[in-house]
Image (cartoon, helix red, strand yellow):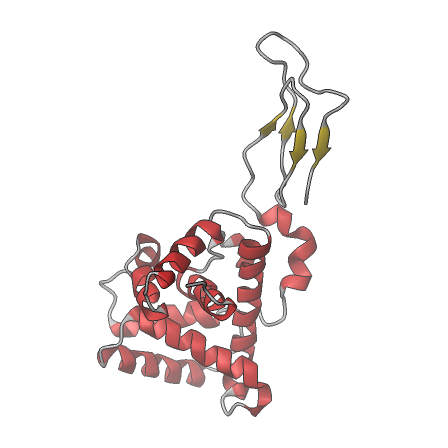
Length: 227
């Protein structure tokens, strides 16, 4: 079964909300395969919640109150959220957890709720309280999607999301995103005719003499740095 764009966006949203990072193609491929094998989005969310990456930030020994405070601080960080609104949100999350909802299910519910607020805009009854948070999350998911789906970067990356808020989105960082990518392995020329195409990262294309001391940079080589 082919995954839909909507499901893929939800998976990327789980990475953003639960791990604070763009997933990269390796993780996204793993999660898509799980969906295709019959897992639900909530199953994947619970799988992420059991991972070392998630539990390093949110250890299992946290009380529901401590988890709710830390989780919502990360989710709403960078936005102007009234203290009373944050406190009410913490109470809701604590209630859900004490009622038996898993941390993964809570994260997925938060993504869905903020997605609805963003989609409906000012027409949503909670837009005044959470509109900026919803837009900030949408911007982060857009950047994470660009990083993973368009640039095809293999590993996870939190740096590309570090400055993204409701006021800063993909259009603001697109031209400089190469500076936030993990450096690719050096590309070495050979003594044959090379046809090299770089990636979106700041690639290093190297010409070193081969084992016989012959120059590997040839006038017929084709080198495109990409980017």
